[in-house]
Length: 553
Image 1: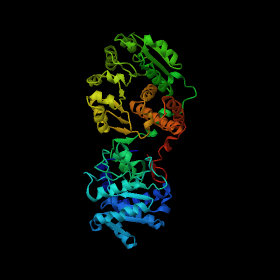
Image 2: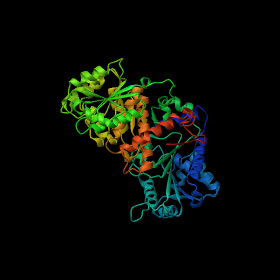
Image 3: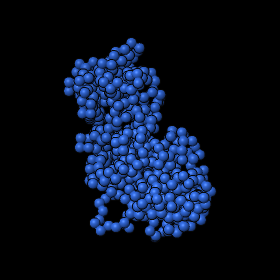
Image 4: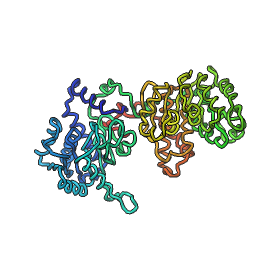
C-alpha cells in the first residue's frame, strides 16, 4: 500500500474532483460515513457511552460534522464542539455539513474562551469516546491557541491513571483520530508543539507518512485506512515512491516448489562472520539464512574458531579462513573471492556479524566490496569497516544491501545516532541514492530505501526485539533470500517482514520482556508457511483494501 504526504493527498483530491468529477462533498461524505461505521464496528460500546466530536474549522472538522450526523442517525449521543467561531468554518463542504447538523437540531458548541472549556471538559468526562477532527494534513506550523488547549484537554482527561500509573480501563476514555492525530506533521511524524494521543486513527484514502513513522506512529496507535472512493488508477498515476512493506511485494519468494526441486535450485549463501567471543553472531546469521529457504549455507570463520562453529552449526557448513588470533587477515580475501567466484556455487555473500574491527578485517571487507561479483549483504562490523569513507561502495561490482542500526548508520555518515533517528527516512534515502546501495535502516519502523529513491516502511516488529542477536538473524534472512536468486528489493522486504512478523508472534506468546533470539527462530517457519500457503491476490485485498474498504496497518 502506498504512503502519502500532504502534497500527494491534495493532488489526489484535486485530480479526483477535476478529472473524474468526484465532488468534495462525495469525498467528505464517504469519509464521515466510513469512519462512523468503523467506529461502531471496532468499538461497539460507543452505542452506550456516546462520543464527543471535537471539530476544527477546515475539512477535517467537516469530516467530524458528517461523523456526528451518522452517529446521531444510529441513535448514538454526540456532543459537538468547534474550535473557535462557527461562523469561521470553511465555506463549502464543511460549512454545508455544519448547517445540516444545525437543521437536524444537533447542538454545536463553540470553544472560544476560558468559560467554554468547562463544558468541553465535562462532556469528555461524561462520554466514552472523543473523535479528534480538529486538524488534518494541512498543518504547517506549531499548534497554538484554542487548538492547543483543546488538544491538551483531550490528552489530560482521557489519560486518567491510577496510583500505579496504569490506565483505569473501566473509566478510560478512548480517542479516535480522523485521518491523522491533530498536531502531527503528516510528512515527518514530528509533534508540532502538542498532539492528540489517539487509541486508533482512521486514515482516509492512504496512510500518511507522518503516522507510520515515529514519533507520529506512537500518537496514531492502531491505524486503519479507509477507501473513500478515490480510484486506484489515480493513485497509480501519481507514481508515489513510498509504500508499506506487504507480502505482495515479495510473494514470488514464497512460491510453491516444484516436486523435482533439489538444494541446488535454491541458492548457496556464504556468511563471513565471527571473532573471539562473537561466534554466536555467526551462528545466528546462519540459522536465519537456513530458515529463509536457501538450499545451502556456508559460514566462513577465522580458522582458529572453525571448531567452535562446527559445534554450533549442524545444517550449515563451515569454511576456515586465514586469521591471526581469531581475526581475519588480508589473506582471507583471496580465499573468499575464490569460493565466491562468479559462476561458482556461491550466489550471495553476507559479511559482518561479529567480525571485529581490526585492520585485517577492514581490508577483507573493503576488498570484497571492490571485487565481489555476487551480491553482498553488509552488516555490523562489515559496516564499521567502511565507516568514515564510504566511497568504496561506489566502486562495487555487484548489488549491495547494507543493514545498519542507527548507531552504525551514524558512523557511516559521521553523525550521531540521535541525528539519524531524528530523520530516519531522509537519512536512509539520502545514503541509498548517494552510494547506489539498498539501505535497511533497522529500528522502530524499519526503513528500506532503494538507490532510485523508492522507499518502504515496515510496521511489524516490537520493542522486545531491541536486544543483541536480532540483527544477525535478519542479516541471515536477507542473505538467504538474496542467494535464492531474487533481486535486492524482494530479498530485503521479505527479510524485514518475516523477521518483524516473527517477532510480533513471539511477543504474543512470551511477552516482550523475555523475548529472545531463540523465540524469533521458532516463529519464522510458521510465518513463512503462512505466506507460502496464501493466495497472492488475497494478501492485501484486491486493491490493498478488504472487501468493506478498510485496511489495517
